[in-house]
Length: 330
Image (tube, rainbow, N blue to C red; front, side, top):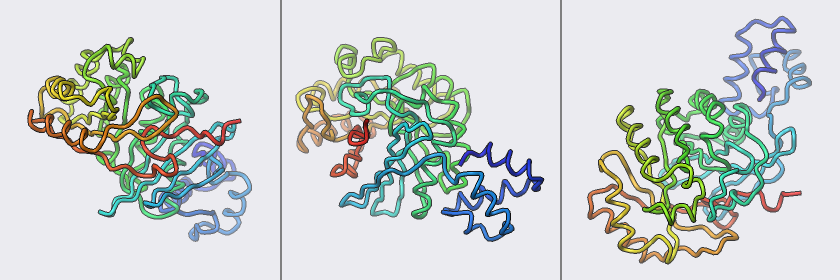
């Protein structure tokens, strides 16, 4: 919802300020209409329905995967495409993958969003409305800014959205912001004091390969990015997640696992998430299960914490690196 429009509308018609809090509380609990807001006068509900849309986004399409994952294609008022994902896990977690931009200007070669034309920095309300869309389906408790876009290039809106997410059930400590290594954004996040988690998309243990996969590395080389992450850990004592997509014959060799583990010092500052590659229109193939297991074993043997990420929603192109609104492009 456009919360500024809501506040302005309520003020113009002379409603007391607590009405703002009432409407927001209903939205955060998953209300799907003004009609459901039973502690508002009927006349006010009708007027708000005419003047303040319930969402800044319009749902164009939803897809549901065999594993229960839901992907929503949403449109801004300017018709910019946004994809978001609800992931359900057997342990009861209901995690959201949220976008911060429509498209992405940082053209990582293995990522479908990186080949989608950058169109728009999402506003705070457009970010929150992605979460509210899924909140109307039921409780939610985790969020990752790993959808479309580079969150550090839209950090003000992202952090403003993070301030509102706890009302939906998503605390800051259950929220992660991912970056390809945009150092000014990492430094600003550290200085902000907002207790969210930082995740670094690393994907290669040395500069030459990382620059091939992620052109941003030419601007912010690996040593500098990791130094910013260490400074974040030193200031917050919150472990930094290292995201590492597994590409067959590219970054999954034994010596690369050793190099990665040696980079991550001090060990307590980092946790590695190995990500099975999800198919996109790129020249890469995913590493085999055996290669991923061997890579993990080397890293663990060096004393670094590591997990293999569960893949969710691959059959509807909702998994990591697959968001691109491909079928929706004009």
